[in-house]
Amino acid sequence: MPAIVIVGAQWGDEGKGKATDHLGSQVDYVVKFNGGNNAGHTVVIGDEKYALHLLPSGILTPGCTPVIGNGVVVDIDVLFHEIDGLEARGIDTSKLKLSANAHVIADYNRQVDKVAERFLGSRKIGTTGRGIGPTYADKMNRIGIRVQDLFDEKILTQKVEGALELKGQILTKIYNRRAPSVEQTVAELRSHAERLAPYVCDTTLLLGQALDRGEVVLLEAGQATLLDVDHGTYPFVTSSSATSGGACTGSGIPPTRIDQVIAIVKAYTTRVGEGPFPTELNDDKGEFLRKQGFEFGTTTGRPRRCGWYDTVIARYAARVNGVTDFVLTKLDVLTGLDVVPVCVAYDVDGVRHEEMPVNQTDFHHAVPVYENLPGWSEDLTGCRAFEDLPKAAQDYVEYVEARSGGRISVIGVGPEREQAIVRHPLR
Ligand code: GDP
Ligand code: IMO
Ligand code: MG
Image 1 (cartoon, rainbow, N blue to C red):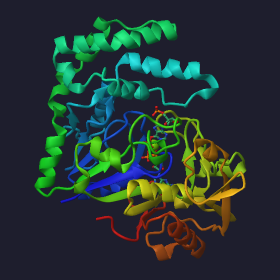
Image 2: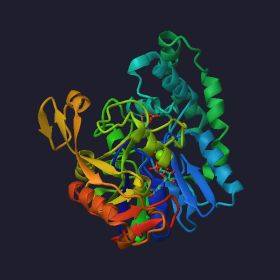
Image 3: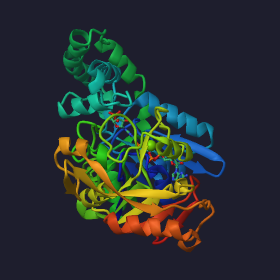
Image 4: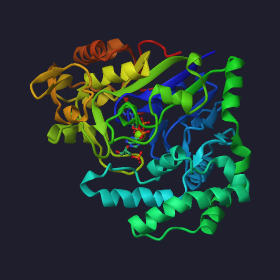
């Protein structure tokens, strides 16, 4: 039986949380495989609205086992804060499993993230300030602290000493800040160990055995294709692998067991933080999208940068992820526009590019080539079948579908669970 991957096709906040929730009842496990509490997924169920950061969106589906995979970086305070928040609202979180190999975000890495951004000034990335980048850097540098280290004080002390040899110097000598002591850090991390223990296991084994039994595993990405550390708009990216390949390394599920890759794509584009964004609108149309789409970050509350749909990016996402299905979200937000431009190519210094330019400078210089499609004024939020959509909205979907490198299987017409049009069932 299969593993299914959900990824974001743009720069995040496409509605991955809602899509995972949509599939929730048909899957047995939902695995977060990358990122940490930089993610923010809003899921609306009836009158209840949930904002999830570190927990996989499948936590909201009774019967589904939520898993935090080895590829995730975990802020344990945030983990318990989220668990407590959900439990207080009657959500059972007892089935949660956490990989013993996931890395832990220590306080010194939250500090380095924030202070490094300040020092970068105009060259800053616009990170979420959660310590994500420095924690992944430690992992690659082989000085990271893993979940399993918390249960052995001697080992933990050795590892924290090793990490602080470098991180302490960086904080004090480069950034002129006070570094936390080894004892302080060990005590803080150890204080969580007892409560954490029941959740911790070998999640790779757990998931491999589940697949052997014929159960369905959904791998849910945080962030998105253009924020991927390899395939995104580097250096304006996050520090993890948010594309479908990352689902394998971040969970221990091999590529041969994945048979479906679902990419979530918004009917327009948004981005939070710094970095190039060819179809960005710095005018009243951008303000229209931000207002209508309520485009403010779930994690940091920052206003999201807004722009038109970009088929070059969608095709790129289809290619690097091996997309089998697209879920097009927030089509309802485009209601009320006379004309809806769609980017079909870029003009880079007089040369037409149909594919993502490999060169960073070219991407910074990319000027979108638009096709202007007719808009519509009808409210779409009550539509449940493709035929319910006004003709102009149907044409919009078919136009972007023909140029995005994959079929659009589901269309979102509102934030709620049932506000979706299923053209091809995902399962
Ligand atoms: P994620 O990070 O990819 O999970 O996305 P976010 O949750 O950060 O942002 C997506 C926002 O759009 C959330 O507030 C969702 O409730 C909302 N949303 C998702 N799908 C739709 C849709 O089809 N229409 C509208 N209007 N809102 C949607
Ligand atoms: P979801 O899962 C949108 C962006 C940050 C910043 C860059 C690096 O909700 O789609 P980081 O703190 O990760 O080192 O910041 O990545 N970013 C996101 N943007 N949605 C997200 O997650 C994001 N997670 C990180 O704004 O530009
Ligand atoms: Mg989000």
